[in-house]
Picture 1: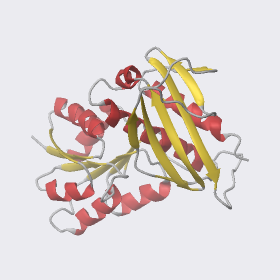
Picture 2: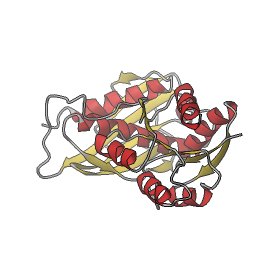
Picture 3: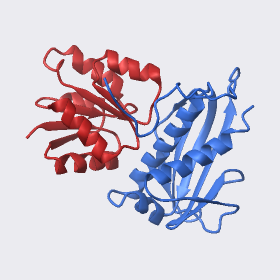
Picture 4: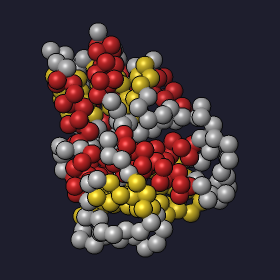
Length: 155
Length: 118
């Protein structure tokens, strides 16, 4: 029932970086280690953890001003915001926590996730979750369920 | 020069929004969350506000701010990753003038701010 979610996560990641003019290409395996990552917890229908990890150069390529820790925290927030909005179209509702950032030397996931190549380095994303009891994926997407990224609604 | 209060817990987002607005001729004041915003709203022509923030979120902030007769007429534009109709309706009911889903395009944001503050 939730088999589609890893693809949703990967697609949302690629779309997010595309919005910041950094194209991502899916690759099978990682060839280098991320230098900075941001972590964000979810509750609600999916209890889990989303992690976005990449290089400092990649973070700076999407935003040349500001510090890398602060910006990757905002990037994971925007990534999970996209995931949340996409999941809402399938009647899955998640609640997101405040992101935290971590810098390191050899940050690596334990299985799962997706790896992307970009001109500024690799981007790794993974979402480790457990569905809550009663959570049910609706196969048909309801495109009227949420506003989309970039929308400007004036009342 | 019209003053815009930009409320977001991300310093980078505040910087991105602030840069776009200053280039468009606005004065920008920053606040890190809803509580900080309530302290700084005096004199603002409008507020741009995130939803998910520590201490006080953006929806609580707009409800508290608009409950104060001194600030009832200050327009608020929400800038957030959230897209749920229920949240949008809550903001609208509290008096928000608009809702922008991140990532934002600077030209569209500035156009919305100009329209709201005109």
